[in-house]
Length: 196
Image (cartoon, rainbow, N blue to C red; front, side, top):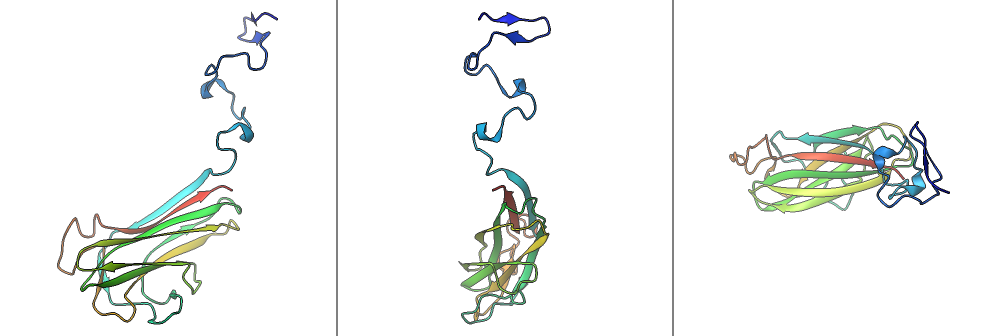
């Protein structure tokens, strides 16, 4: 059958697959004209939301986790920052990145832990060796959202359990004003909610 062009812009006589590759682009298609099965990524893996909190204030402390084999508790160490999130979907996954920029008054470890709401036990813990120069500890955590209820993730830090000296956030040792102390170095939490 020959192609026929009507005055209203329609084409007749065109069979499936009759157009050369690259002829139809995104702007040509009507809204919602492509089903999820035809998408390159299928239906999963879509970014549903992104949230983050950045903490830039410089501070110092001597608080620490218990010096034993127990899981760090939400009442130990010091609060760095919190981030509230309400999942869009109960079947999505929350992927979290969190970090603490720190220094020590002496060569010793610093650590951080991620908590949720008022749950006592840490979800994840990371640590790094430190000294009077700034270092950044980084951690990752993921969990299936399981509901669309709001929750708050809490980042806490600790000097070396049973250690000595002071731990500094977002700065080098106590007198240092390097790299914009309290303005550029930072701690934070970043959450990506990804569909199932």
